[in-house]
Length: 164
Image 1 (tube, rainbow, N blue to C red):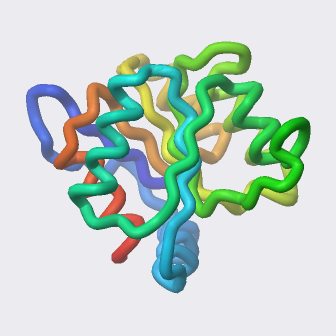
Image 2 (spheres, one colour):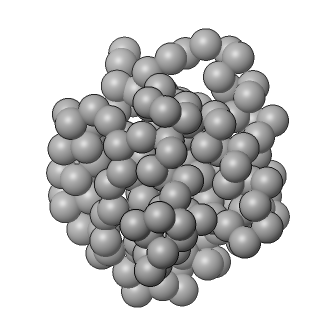
Image 3 (spheres, rainbow, N blue to C red):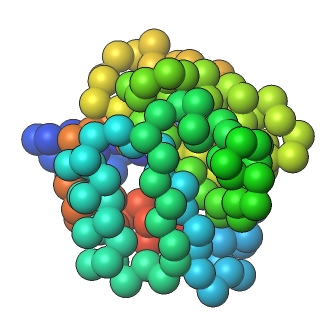
């Protein structure tokens, strides 16, 4: 797992832990794609706008799908309810503090599902609580980014995923 932290005071990238093989597999998979399909699970309109701007400014070619709560994310990923015909995302940006099911619960569901557990998950949180980081690690998140996000920082992560 690669945990990434961006703090408000510093845009320095702090790499806490890296499972090299896992990361290489993510990058090889994403690098071979012409367009990246991103699922953003976020209920805050400001963060949705920020992500959209970062994608545009970073010239990330792809599709951004937004769902606003944990239950909707699960339905999308498991292709149930109104999402039966949904195409699977290549990567998931998952806020921890979302309604219905929180991000950690959604992460558990993703990583316990053999059909979708391969999808890279980037956890987003305004919390700097160690417990959130530890649980994200325990539940096999691929990245952890501490919000508030800055466009430059989000672009850096997207470029890392896209180009590495």
